[in-house]
Length: 143
Image: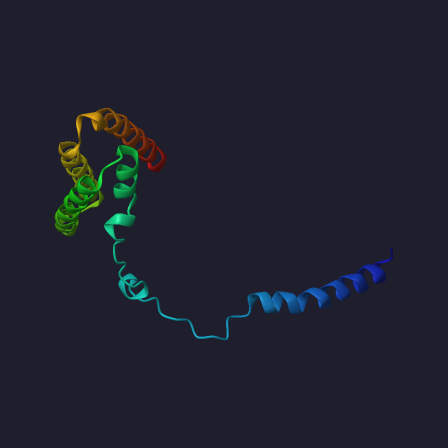
């Protein structure tokens, strides 16, 4: 290939690529939007109804709670929800929020145990072991 052919080839390639380079580097024609505070971007989420939450549904299913027990468990969760909202609002950092959540879980499941019949005690212990393993694996995964 001669010097002249190489130059012509480089010129052709340059002419083909140059518009693409300009297009890729051109600033957007749309004005940049100013980032808004996070609270304004996302509407505040409403908590799911208690009967739709895994904490409720899994306990009712695995422990085979009767209607009276399920209703009492729902009231336990309602009371605990009020406490955790206050605790999280007062929490100064992530560790305090985690501790509030741990207290919430311990409180809810501790009160649940008082509702159980003798035949539900062993399934409760098994369920608590499953939850403990779940939370430990989640903690290890998240560091």
